[in-house]
Length: 390
Image 1 (cartoon, rainbow, N blue to C red):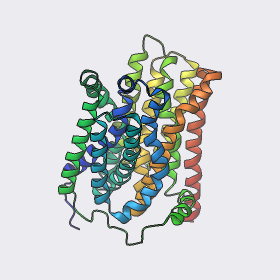
Image 2 (image 1 turned 90 degrees about the horizontal axis):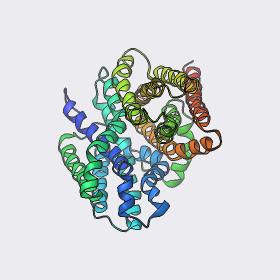
Image 3 (image 1 turned 180 degrees about the vertical axis):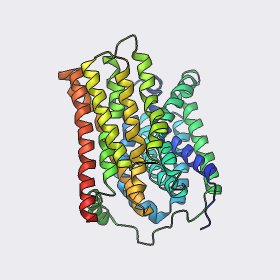
């Protein structure tokens, strides 16, 4: 295939498509109080509007990684955008809660299709010298989207109702589906000619894939990262000083994005991605200890999330570095999506369970154990890769 020698416009479209995938979470999480007013009888079930996408991702993440290379990246990407647009359009009608939950479950299929296909395509379309930047940009898509939706979407939902935000999301996804259908050339990633796996084969391949120190390492490390990221942003603010709580709540996720796009991208030009992940984890543990020793200090929480920015970008870059084959990249992205959804699903409940009896000390212990677990996974996988190379 004759690849576009300057595919930056196409890469920008793919990154925007990734932001609409993040928007599938943000459009509900950011306006959660407004949805509570729209569904006053929902009670605790309202929380499932957020978590049901994670549940879908846990169940289907690795399956998607197996299927996309057989179905074709372009078809999966465009189909995922169209399906997501259709679900958002239905949600804009503010249907009864059972119907709304059903649309969110189906939307989870769209989400997993996008987060498997898009990074695989970005890695293939990027020149090797540009890949640290493009994969780092991809790694920041979630935080950037949440910031934008909070800034623009929240006042819109408050003044016009949540349905308007869902409708805008549907329109943007549909426009991107049309643009990518026209712009994305066929055969960027060759389709696998192997037959589609059956249920027995899918179940049998899960342990084999997660046993691979190449395919599984980024995903298993990502599980520990996602276990803490949203959980800390949710549970940590009440332990912060009243005078700086709002400022810190804004700058903590922004710090991760800034570090990922600047220092992280530069380091990736000179160092292996896994080594940068380990550096980020070490710095994060030092910051957690600084928060414990200096409770209420302004800088340690910001530096903590800045350190996690190194883990964020490098984890995505590790996938193509460890897996040159696009089919293996799709599997690795599927595993990462599966583990990321599992981490998001479990992180906040586990942290709340530890903080209930231990308070802030529970949050410190939770964070240290998670980052030690992430480091242990990468060190073990690295040792196994060395043995294989020998």
